[in-house]
Amino acid sequence: MATPPARLRSAAAQRTLASRMEASGSLWIPSASARTYAARQRVTYEDAPAWDAGRGCSGRILPGATALGEFLRRRFQGIRAVEGYSCRPNTADTSRLSVHGTGRAIDLMVTPIAGRPDLAHGDVIADWLVRNAAAVGIQYFIWARTAYHAARPDAPFSPYTGPNPHIDHLHVEITHAAAVEATPWFVAGRPAEMPPPQAPFSLPSSSTNLMLGAALVTVLVAAAAAAYARGGSD
Image (cartoon, rainbow, N blue to C red; front, side, top):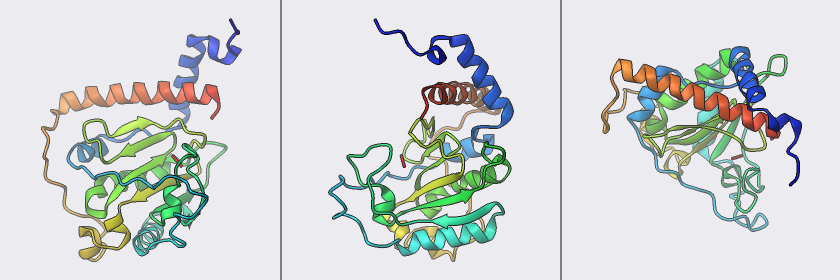
């Protein structure tokens, strides 16, 4: 039997690394507010097609993605650039086209600080994206080793273990309707905030929400530490 690398052998070492990552601010831990909003909304995930050597690419970024990127850059400090269209395979699943290749994804570039994500700026942006996901048509995003899945209100956050930890940018994907500026946020004139979504699900009590939050932190930190030890969608 092959001997696993030393960095994977010790569970205690991984726990220590996890604690250090949390303490040093190396991953996004969604706020209680973000968790509450995430439980109230669902956005169907619209995937990119299979990779076909670029024949399925849109050829350009779509208007809704451009408008969202421009709005966020004006509204939030810390975004040094917005990147968009790129005709290429998905880095986490090379059998599929990247959503960047459909014109429905943007990268909000946030410069790391001493090799760690700038959570002071990035977390504020991430919280806004969660709060306004249904109104805008944000189906998925990644920030600082954590992914938000708007199609899964019962389990909206997960550790992101793809090859790019996304500590220098937020990768944001929007739906087809958002890409043509047909969702409520665009129709309303791109306001700074939309009204809270109506709750189609039973929200946890405050005490339960605190317990769920603690459990989420434990899961995200442990999984991020394991992914970091292994060495590293889109």
